[in-house]
Each structure stands twice: as structure tokens, then as C-alpha cells.
Length: 332
Image (cartoon, rainbow, N blue to C red; front, side, top):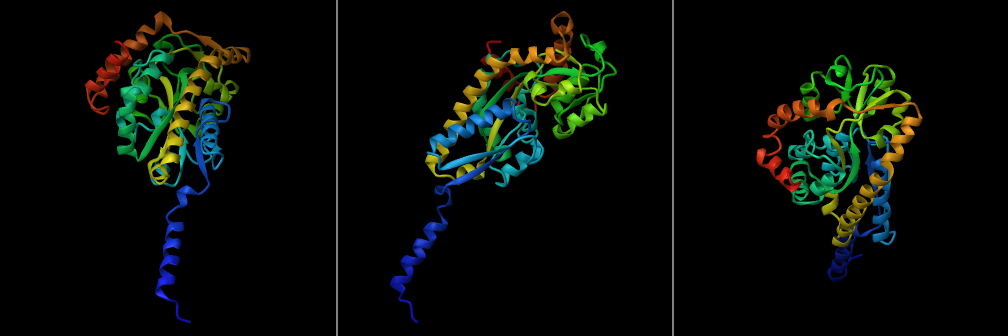
């Protein structure tokens, strides 16, 4: 049977349109979350998923996979960059190796309050880091989880001074700035993947780690740690990223829904931190954890970290002027 050309061409054109339009079809996206359900990462993710679903009229949804089910946090950056994963929420120190300029937000004692964290991430500094991360890592930051300062926990003894810290084996992420900070304080920390941390603490492979109060609670570190030192060297930020390949494959209205849901989830995260951190701190005390403030207003910790670590990383963050710009934005 002979098919006429004027019949075949419209059929082929219709088939081509169908193949070219997957982004307009209903989709379920996957989101990796490093922490357990109940922490600030989970709070950000659930808020985003609800907002995104609402903004797309329920046409699109996001499934959340907490507790590193889709790989450790740095693996999720690689997978998102290749378009193999849609979304991920991870500690900022785990995106810094892929886009080093983000490290300006992880230099010790740059951020000194939740409000300062918000100022940097949502102002000109944050906008520049978003563009850099698209360029460097192939992922786009669309939201931020504000998790509070990373306090030091350990199972060995109360720590108030740097002398008290000697002999304590501390787990840190595989992040050069955080490693250098502990070295400035006089110890060599143990770099370790997040997924291995609880077991390492439980088996006393390491004595301690640092994370915000909310993460300490969500990960049930009170079961394997006794002491908290209320240091404030690093405000924990956890970006929500989307694969740039995935983002660019979406229709403009879906892209807009992603960006707007990210902004809404970011605002929710900030309010959540302010409303819950003190409550969680009290709960950890009730569960037997002992909280100690560092001696002399943390003066020795601050001096050694800023004088040693800041100059060492000027080049990697894009130059000293990037640090100066961040400090200027904070009025310092």
C-alpha cells in the first residue's frame, strides 16, 4: 500500500511534537536529602515540594529521599550536574569543592547571626554565587536552609578552651576550609562522609563532630554524644539545588514555579529556625546532653581561625575583595 506524502508529513510532524514536549507532561521529580526526616533540610524540602505542587496545579510533584538514600551529598552534586538527579539539599561545605567561591560563606566567623546569613544569601553576594555555581558545577541554587551555628559535640569531656580540645578526635566533612579551621585550633580533624558519621561516633572511631542543634536532634546524636560546646564559628547553610540540565528542559512556567517555590521555602526555613532552635536545645539538655559556652567569649577560637584561615583561602574564593564585599554587606 502506497502512503501519500501529503498524509505522511503531518503524521511525522505530530510525532515530532510529542517527542519534543516531555517537559509539558506531568512529572515526578526526585529530591535527595542528606539528613534524616525532621531536620532543617527535610523542612526545606517538604515546603518546596508543597509549594511547587500548588504552583503547578498538582501536575508536577517532588518525592523526597532523606538520609542519603540517593548517595552522599557530594555524589548528588555530580549526579545533578549530569542530569541524573533533579534536586538535592546538602550542606554548603559539600558544594564548595565544585564551586570554590561559595567558600566565602564557610570562612570561620564571617556570619555572626541568622540575620547576617539571610543578608548574604539573598543579597548581591548570594546572587553572584548562584551564577558561579551554575557555571562551575552545572547546578542552580534555588533555595537555602538556615540551620543555625555548628556547635561542637563530643563523648569525651566538656570543652571550653583550645587546650581542652587537644586529644579529641573530631569528624569534619571533606572540606578544606573546615579542616584548616580545626588545624588552626591545634588539632588534625578526621574528614569523613556524612553517611558514616553516626556509626563512627557510636563505635568511638571519632569522639566528636560539629553540626547545628537541629541536626544534632534529627540525627539522634544525643544517643552517642554527651557534651556540646556552643561555638559559633560557622553558620550552617544548606542550599537546595536543581540540575541545570533539568531546569533548562522545563517550560518557562515550570521554571518560574521552581524559582518561586524555592524562594517561598527559603522564607519558611528562616522562620522555622527562629521558632524551633531554642526548643530543640532545651530538649537535648533534657535528654542528658551538657552544654558549655567557650571561655572568654570564644576570643581565642576567633583569633586563631580568622588570622590563619582567612588569608589562606582568599585565592580560592575569588580574591580578598570577595571577602571584603561580604563583610561590607554586613556592615563590617
